[in-house]
Length: 59
Image 1 (cartoon, one colour):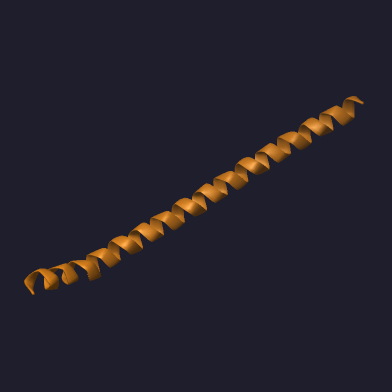
Image 2: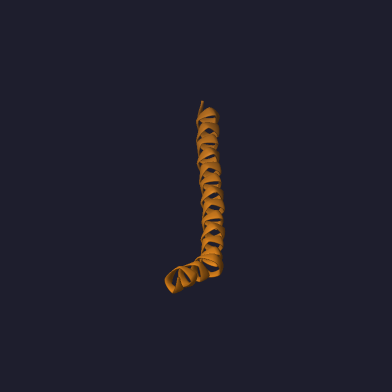
């Protein structure tokens, strides 16, 4: 009975640690995607939108 309880505890701890690792991976992936999206948006804004604004304001 005691060994069953300890194995259950170990299993719960293992589940918790895997959840934490999975959560950290998801957070890392999401933050990387957001960073890439932000960089892409910033570069596109810098390259495409400003000349468009200049051409609109001049005409």
